[in-house]
Image 1 (tube, one colour):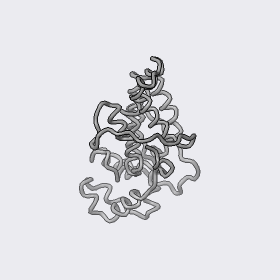
Image 2: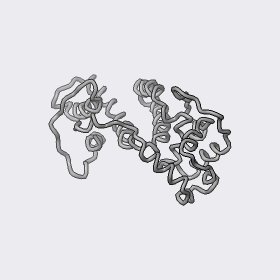
Image 3: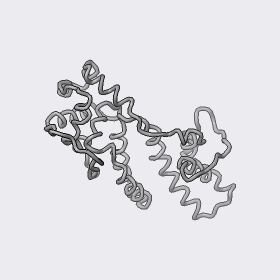
Image 4: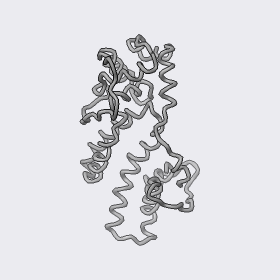
Length: 225
């Protein structure tokens, strides 16, 4: 998918341009649909599609190339999931100016998939690579200043409202204590400069846990080309 995206965007992959035999398409194999859409766009002239179809394919491939593929390539990293998802939503809010139909459809779908923006999971971002030290410090300060509840709620987490100005620190709340509390981790390191966090055994313990969290089950998609 990464190589096809480069070709669609007018670049050449490091190992050159080559084509694989199309695989099976199935309702459960959503990745195949993206791959087919890219190939249909690149071979639109040979396939003699009408102008309306070409325009639709161009719109779809613009979205896939600029937004979807970069998100998909990092989707297995739990620590980066909160930052990725928040940025994706903000990107779609901006993309409304270019293609309001696609952007709105994506935003509506994302409303049902904000798991990594919930209070419980936002602290994962403390262990990721997407945020600046200041952004991590803001999350840490908000978490340290937020009172821990006597007990944590059960059931489906509450999805937050997100705007173009929302930060991950804004999404921290009482339930954000769940991760560190479950692991029995002290909070002292949160008040230290981010550069010193790796020296803390508590930080290292949480980092190891978050690094092993499974985000995406891609086994069903591994044979897609």
